Length: 224
Image (cartoon, rainbow, N blue to C red):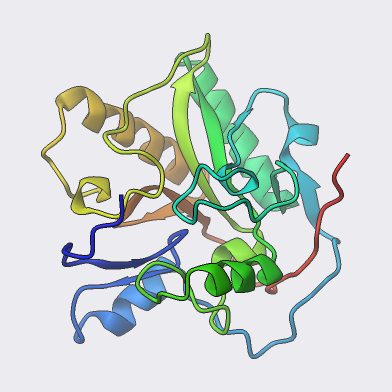
């Protein structure tokens, strides 16, 4: 549920968050704002379908449904594309989790820049949706929104749902049970081990650390 009373202002998909004027520049750099001064790329070179890399992931692509904070479907179909280097790291992270009885479920992966524009058109609130003029690491194919599930089936309690806009989604929030905090810790430590970094306000969001060389893209995948 969107709660404007929360003191934290957040942009969807880990694109930005800022608590004060003094912290704004630092936070923007950490949370993934990118500049679209470079031309938006429409070439699919370097992108891979994660399901072609491994069949061990679970997909729950929320923006291919209306089960999201926009309450509207903005993807034509549920596919997860990321840069090849990102996919390889995700597979390694997932293999580590499988050995411990878990696996990764994906909520969002690469997001075409035109979809960012569509999100903005549906919900032009800079508190919750990134202005497409800025773009995001999702638009580069180097960010994912994920959670844990049991490898044998069944969900894992992470304390909040995906895209929960409140302090309960923050990594620093300690009001959850020890079990929930241990789940978040496992996901974070595993992802960081394989080259990802999170942001402080969204337990589900991970940027691949080597994303600086990728351009913002508007490549669109084909639906079956």
